[in-house]
Length: 352
Ligand code: PMP
Image (tube, rainbow, N blue to C red):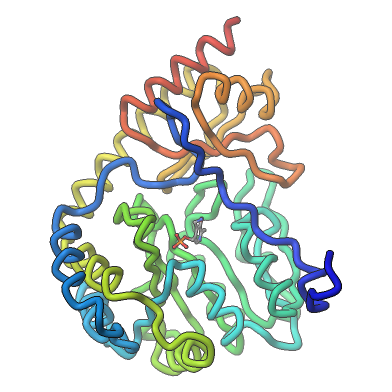
C-alpha cells in the first residue's frame, strides 16, 4: 500500500494471469492457447500494414468490423472490437452491466468477472454450479442487473444449449445477458443467431483461442446496434483507438480464412477426444468438454501434488482457486505430441 494510491486501488484483488515461463522444452498446457500457428494469411497482412505505421489506425475499425459482420451474418453496426476479449468484457461491464440490482454469474467461472466488478463498483451474486459442475440457467433468478455466462463455461468446458440461452434472455428481458464465447468454436453452440430477436443479448468472442492469435490481442462483441453504441461511447471516453494497424490487419485476415478455422478446430477437437480417453484409462474423471481444454481430477491423487509432479517434468497445467475444484487440473489441448508427453508423465506419476 502507498499513500499515493487511490482508495479503489486498495480494495482491488487483481486477476492472476497464467504463467508464461521460458523453460526450454516446456510442455505448456496452462493457458488455453492454440497449439498451432495462425492462418498463413496473417503474417503477410501484418507485414503490409507495417508500411503505414506512421499513420494512426482507423478509430472505428470499419474494415475489420465489416469482415466480422460478413462472416457472422450481422450488420457492421452490430459489431464492436477491442484489445482482446478481456478489454471488450471490461467495456461491457462499464457500459451495460452496472445497475442497482446485482450482476449474476456462476460461482465457478472466469475469474476476471469479479475483478471487473471490483474495479467498476458493480454488485454481483454468484450462482452455484450444480453437483455435476454444470450451469443451471433456471437458478439465475431474483433481482438481476445483468447476467454474464461463458459458454462453454471456464474452467469446466461444459457447454449450454442455445435453448438454455434463450431461456435466460426471456427470464431477464430488462437486463443484458452477456455470453462470453471465448471457447465456443471447439464444439459449442453460439448464441450469435439469437442477436436478431433479442435486444438484451451481447455475445463476446476472441481471436485468442480458435484462431490462434492470443499474441495479437483481438476480441469482439456482437449485439444489436443500441448495445454496441453504449460500448463505443465508453471506448471513446478512454481510448478511441481500440486496435493498432497490425492487429486490425492480422485479425481481418484471420477472420476471413474460414477454411483454416474449420481445419484447425477439427484437429484440436480430435486431439481432445484422444486425450480424454487416455486420461480416463488412467482413472481420471473427465468433464464433458466442448472447449480446447479438459477439466479433470483423479479420485486417488490430490490436484496440487499432480500439478507439482508434472511441473518437475516441465509440463505446465492450470489449477484454479475455488475450494470445490481444488483437485481438478485444467489441461489445454496441445499438439498430439504434447498431449502424449503429458499422458506418459501422468502414467509415471500415478504408478510410482
Ligand atoms: N473469456 C474467457 C472465458 C477466457 O477464458 C478468456 C481467456 N483467458 C478470455 C475471455 C479472454 O481472452 P482474450 O482477452 O485473450 O480475448
